[in-house]
Each structure stands twice: as C-alpha cells, then as structure tokens.
Length: 587
Ligand code: MV4
Image (cartoon, rainbow, N blue to C red; front, top):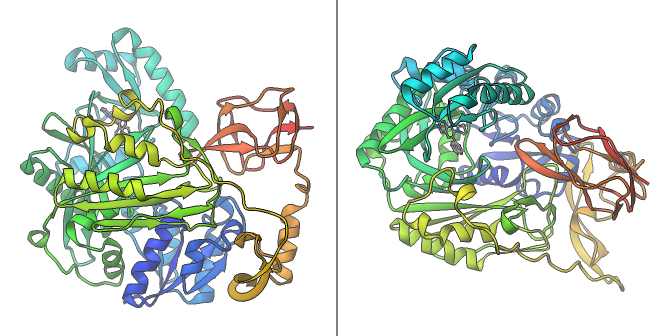
C-alpha cells in the first residue's frame, strides 16, 4: 500500500483526497501557491510545501516544483485531483519515471482520450458509437449538404481537436452551411490552434448521462452506475444526480457495458467516466474523462463505494474487491455545486473574496464536501467552487426534498454563491418531472428575480485587543504552525510575522510595483477577453472590474488595484492575452 501521497491540487478535491488517505493511514503532503499558504487543504495535510507563484501556471502546474517536493518528502504516490495535471500524460510520465505512482490511468489512455478523433476511433473499434455522423473531416461544404439532405437538419459541426463544447456550431438549415463551417473553424483555431472539423446529426434535447468506471491493474473493470448531469449552464455543471432517472434499466445496463468496453479498449486502469448523450431511448458515446470527476460523490452515495479509497488501492496494485454483480444501486443522490458566482438574473458573475461566514448543513443523508471555512478567501486565480452539497434519499423525490431542506440550512457570507439558482432548479416542476435536458437551464429556466446571497459586513475596526492564534510560517519552503498573539481583527491569511527571511523577501518582491495600487491593470493568466466593462474616461474605484477574462473554462473579473480614471484600454472583446499583459491603464 502507498505510504505517503502528494496531493497535487487545492480546494475541496484536495481535502477529499486527504480525508481518504487519513482513513487509510496514508500520510499526506499538500502543495500550495503563494495565495494558498493558509488554505484548508494545507491546514489538513500532514505536511505542506510551497510551490511558489500565484497563477496556476507558476504553482499547481509547475512540474519541476512538484517533482522537487516529491524528492524532498519521499512521497510514493501523487493524486492529481481534477483539473490541473489530472489529464496530462506528460506529467503522469514524469511521476512514474521517478518510480512514484500516478493515481490515475496510464499515460497512453490519457493520450487516446485527450484527442476527440482518437477517442471516437477507440470507441468505434470496440463497437460503441457516437451520434451518427461522418468519421472523415469536412473539407467541402458539399459534404455537409449531402449529409443534411440524407439525415435532415439541424447538423452539428464540431471541432475535431476541441472539447468542453467549444467550437460546436449548429447548422439549422441548408443556406447556413458555409457560415457555420467558417464560424466553427474560426472558433476551433482560436481555442485549440487547429481548425479541423467533422459533423454529426444534431440532437435537440439530449440528456447528459455518464457512467463511472473503475478498473484495476489485473484486468478487472466494472461500472458503478450512471449519473445525470443535464442541469448545466454554458458547459458548467450546476447539479448532478445518480442514478440517471427515468431511463429504461436495460438501456442503463447497456450504457454501463458500453462504458466498460471503451475502458477495456484502451487498457484503462483506475477511476474514469464515459460520457454519453441520451435522447428518445438511445444513447450515443461522447467522450471519456480520464480522471476522478467533481460529481463522483453521488456515485459513492448510491453504491456505498469510496472512489478515492479504491483509486488509492488500485494504484497500490490491489485487485478490485468486488465484481460487477456485487454492485448495487441504492436510493438516489443529488449534488449541488456551490460556486462563488452571482446568479442574479441568470448572470453567474464570478464573486471572489473572503468568506466571512460559512455554515454547512447536516442531518440524515446530508454531506458537505467543502474546500473552505469561514475566514478563507476565494481567489480569482482559481476555480471558484466553494464546495458541494450531496444529499441521499431512498428515492428521487426524497433526495430532492432533502437537498432543498439542506440548502435552506446552508449559509455562505462574504461572497455571492449559486445557492439560490441551485434551489430554483431543484424546486422547478420540470426538474421533478425529468422534463429537463442540457438546454433547459439556458433556454427554459427563468432566473429573473433570483438574488445572490447578500455579502456580509466587513469586520469592525478600532481598538485592537490581542488574541492568541495559531498562525503559520514558512521556512525554506516548508510550512509550520506556531501559536502567537495577534490583533483580534487580523485576518488569518495576513497574520503578521508569518515567516522567516525567505517569506518576507518574497512578499516584498510580490508587492513592489503595486504599492498603493498599480495603475496598470494586468491579467493574472492566459485567456480570452470576453468583455470590457469600462470605457476610457470612466471613474473607477479600487476593486472595480475592468475586463472579464475567460480562462480555464471560467469567466473572471480582472479588477483595478487603485481608484482613478480609465486612461487607456488596450484590449477588446475576443482578444487573446497572456499572463501579465496590461489590459488597461488607470490614472
Ligand atoms: C452534441 C449535442 C447535440 N447533438 N452533439 C457539447 C459539449 C460537447 N462535449 C458535446 N456537446 C454536445 N454535443 C450532437 N450531435 C449537444 C451537446 C451539448 C451538451 C452536451 C453535454 C452536456 C451539455 C451540453 C450542452 C449543450 C450542448
């Protein structure tokens, strides 16, 4: 069995992995960016090591820094969580080349599934089919016209090397073929650097149904039931459930067997998810995700199987302790994602900042997988998932009622969250009646009148009585807890004297240039400008959003550090920017 696992992630998934390791007697190593020095995953791990940097590229995506921590700690396994390095074959190879276990599939499987064309071919080879379409790439609009007159419109044009819904264009009817091809190619080129496209029949109201698979290194592979993730907005899932409801059990079993075939076909090992679209009694293969997914807890709740424990056992070389016939689905589970986003009027605007209060619900069948506690801060640099509420019930109506009850108990103060939108979905008759599809949130759900949770008052200032607090110092890149007296109002993350020479030097360097707030507004990471919020000449205050940056599938506000007047705007919507690029100047 593994003895010491490095968790190459942050937030709730790092916490989830640390919990499983603790239960199994495996020591844990957290890694952290400069912004996460006092984060919950750091507080919970047995030891924590700095990666440096703030943006993901400098910290959680810094292979050399992570390899260095492996070297220093003697970790014998690395859990990548989701996002970051979880589906990066080069990272997996770099880990295994050191004789350390990558807790996930082999790099070859990651590579096959990382590219849509080879992922489709891998499924076709084992007799699992996607939406009817063509396997060859589109080179001539006549191909689309021929397909359209044979199968009818709409036709979906998809980026061959795309993903996450980017680069898909729907051709409503024949006169629109050229336009859709050009638009799909343009989008594919700008997002993925390649403009190859192919086509499929377009499904108007599909449900997104996925199958959890688990395979060991001894040739055993099982499926652990299905999940429905149709309640999503702009490819960001909001609510997931297990099992997928209202679908013939024989169809679900066939989907499960198809998923196992796909997994076996690429010699898959560890936990993975095979995604399908479901419409009118038929299912169609979409892609395979070669990682543990955000929504894995709903599968855990209806199977009783701890997926992270099984991941760790599989990576240790153990055979699966159960066969397909041992897997039973019991009751129904629902997960709601609680993101720090303001859903008011359907906008879902990122709302980073300090969490001043957090009360997680409890009670029968109620689970909170969180990444933060009160006093922690949601950074604009990372995913803004605060945590996930997962409720189990004996059947779907009971699970819905329990989730709504638990949502009523939940309190998050300081940042706006998606809680109210989650409740609006769960309370809607279409959701109860399974009348929803992947288009439902965007096209049918009415979020007018939905308000964000109010931001809490800022802490009081004035007389500063001292209180004893555990604070954390970093010496030579390693984090230590010390107890000391600090002003009562000092936020935990900014406690004074937190570090030796190394830390003070670094923070001084980090702040130089922004003292008093830089007039240059820079983007923290590579991405695309989706909106410029201000105009030249506008008066702005420190903290006001200047542009909206889309990066890592999320929209982020990039804010002014100081008050003043917008002197220059250097970008417009659609521009690609790199980390550190100046987008506006405030005077
Ligand atoms: C489709 C489709 C309808 N017809 N393909 C979007 C993400 C990408 N992975 C596949 N997607 C879709 N492919 C055909 N032929 C509808 C979607 C789709 C979708 C799929 C899964 C989850 C959410 C979605 C939201 C909108 C569209």
